[in-house]
Amino acid sequence: MIPSERQEHAISTRLVSPSTVSVGPSKANDYDGFAEAYAAANETNLVNAYYERPAMLALAGDVTGRRILDAGCGSGPLFAALRERGAMVSGFDASAGMLELARQRLGDGADLQVADLGSPLPYADGTFDDVVASLVLHYLEDWGPALAELRRILRPGGRLIASVDHPFAVNLIHREAGREAECNYFETTNWTVEWTVGGHTALVSRWNRPLHAMVEAFTRAGFRITVISEPEPDPAAREMFPEAIAAQSRFLCFLFFVLQAD
Image 1 (cartoon, rainbow, N blue to C red):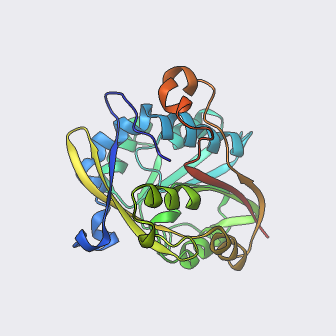
Image 2 (cartoon, rainbow, N blue to C red):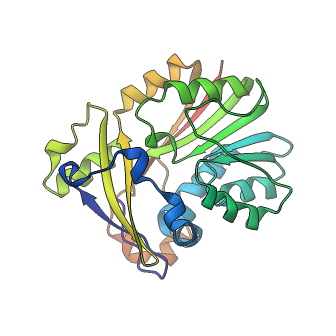
């Protein structure tokens, strides 16, 4: 279950009933409208700064000299961390507002482009050694076109390192809210939350799918799964967020994959 961090830039979340959502997923996810507030929260909160991002970096391992694409790079914290570790990084995001914050962080020379995951990407075949897709695939109902493009721009033997909402956690959120009928684990289901952060409120809509559907999508796209990971938060999180960590017998928000392009 995703905790509520008690800190200045916390993101509070409220599950929204599908019947009350009047816009589609493509309209709900307007990161331009709260880019600065979200980026500030992403820098310091538990689930991003002390859980998801350290796990992605650990799975990436030694990236010195590797050509890496940050797919859905947002304001660039993962891009920056990979570059600091010696990688040659490019990034894209659908939000121009988030990319502007990334440029402020990374400098004018950073290779950043506006692009949509799932549409044709502006990179040649076999350009990258790795692609990192940090919490972006779950915004798509159909993973097929996105995975095909990521496979195309990876060299043979290259890696896709991806994190997504954990389907068990999403199912648990609905069950604890007494709304399990809205989230059948074995179906691909759209679900929406209302985020409030830094005085801004926005609807965020994602697609939850069972593990077997994820595996089938990866293998159909020509990837071989080498790692499935359900990590613990960074050890520093126990000092930074003792109540949130102590409240859970097993911290479980996201599911991580390392996939090799065959």
